[in-house]
Length: 125
Image (cartoon, rainbow, N blue to C red; front, side, top):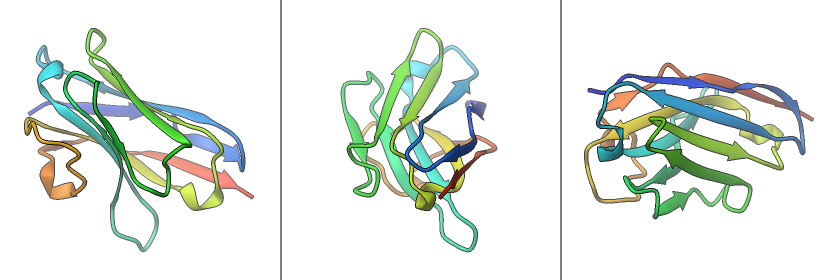
């Protein structure tokens, strides 16, 4: 399994931006499909975005489409989530996840083998 560490969360006003990073251990990062999920208090973990191993294909939940952008740098073993035009309803703990599965978009938590510890994002109104 790959080890994942998220960073970049914080408190931001509505309309603001944050960029989350997820650093992966190991030398085979490019062989993993990566995803971002989030979980708000009292709610189930939900899909936010995923990206193929090459970075060519990306997928988004309807709720974030047009506001969030996922990207990856395989040379740096890192996947990013740029979040713009943030809304209070984006408040959640954000998790990155990895899977050796190839098919995308892989929107279910059960599709992933490895998870980070999460980073809190709080958007104030």
